[in-house]
Length: 207
Ligand code: SF4
Image 1 (tube, protein in one colour):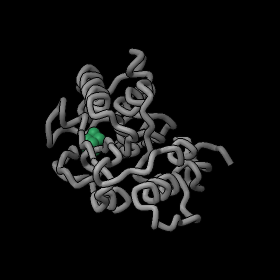
Image 2 (spheres, protein in one colour):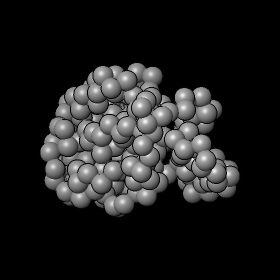
Image 3 (cartoon, helix red, strand yellow):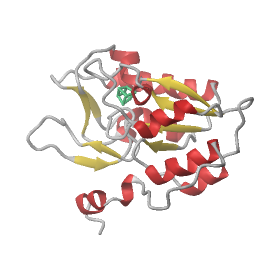
């Protein structure tokens, strides 16, 4: 989970000097999902397109290495950090080992983040590449579909390089971000981040 205090320390950007945010490309409507769609609509992130105080740097790690459309893929035997440590693998839906390709894509995304000097990342949760809070544990299409706490490979790599990440469903964090981008934005105090939901606490036995 992301430290919300970090978001409060972000500078107040201007149109001349916008906040630089690295974003999972699909969250902004780019058709880079495994099935050639944008994986649905995410208004909480699409909203960022309306501010002149933000510059979005869009990237899709899976498309970078595997193209679009492509097979679905998930992590097997651990999290994105475990993949980076050589202890887990990313497999395509049909069982092809995509580990080397996703690590290469994660390195490319981190290099982009460094080059663009991004100040925050907003990434698609649950993805084995971009997930930052919760990811699948094994094949999401299996009968025993399961989730685990952890980051996907690209998100893990970005975190290791010191970048902060929030997801499309970290609504409380996004509220803070909206106010940074537009000081007139009134924060919705009822908004919560994904790790604060009843589903999260109950699924991971944290209640
Ligand atoms: S790899 Fe990331 S950016 Fe690409 S489709 Fe999946 S979640 Fe979106």
